[in-house]
Image 1 (cartoon, rainbow, N blue to C red):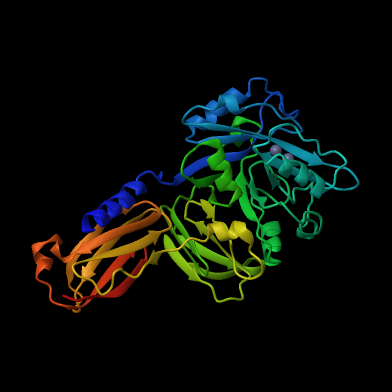
Image 2: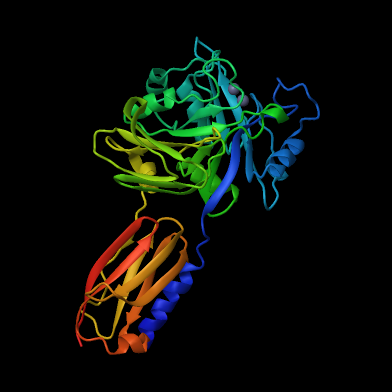
Length: 408
Ligand SMILES: [Zn+2]
Ligand SMILES: [Zn+2]
């Protein structure tokens, strides 16, 4: 029986290795090229040239979104670079304006004379993801009220940074995002170049947290809001629980937490910070900055109202389970879960808090793990008397200690 349970634990451990470790992939979701976008006159600015330029800049994927034009760009993909088909479809009828880029579009959609919601539905029906582009650009003024009233469903993404909106209100435009979030509706912010020439490239991008750069995996992660926006800020970890956000940056030194109506909830002068929800915020999101003027934006955590299944997917938590069997002799199982990659320490302590055994002391990818502690593992624990012991897990800024009983 003991032999069997050892094999079981071994199998659990082995199965962990079959899960690919998630990491961040850099990409631009709004890209134009010649000849598909009519406003590009440089005949050398072709799709393959654009791909090689973004590749040289260290990108992992690109979405072609030409004005009212779809073409099959996917064959330009290579094992280390994914090209995704899309289109920038606009509506301009009946006094309505709006541009929507469609991520993973299978064929052209035409927006002429449609309502906003009809165009969103056309995109959605192709199992593609609609993004509202530069909503307040001077020629295309869309208000949050319009988003809320005329785009009631299936719109989950809005540009908050667009690299070519030189006129009002400028590249960064957070107001529609904050206004929609303030009504309790979840919408993700997206940063994109909207590049029409080489000088437009690499102004802002998204970092997608994904197990691979495979097209479907990337699209799924983007659909679920598992990405952050950046103009240069690099984030090592973002953690959401149902009532808390924690993040850590490589090159940021100021973190601002923002809630309802875009109001600042707290500002922290550090590369890492956490915020615990009070309950009246409506939503909480964070902006990261540094002295070089680089910025980063993470997706919001909705505090009240219906959050929907997509939001639920994004809630991931640390968990240290109660050991079993408990009381134990000589062996017990200790299970834990981590939401992202962390350096994990799992130790056994005596009643005085002294470490008497180490079960884990290494980097672990996001997963659920089960470890066995047996007093026969080492001479040091072989002679342990009956009594109360503790096991403690530390991962990032998470730390939890639980009690267990050895009964010999
Ligand atoms: Zn546009
Ligand atoms: Zn565009």
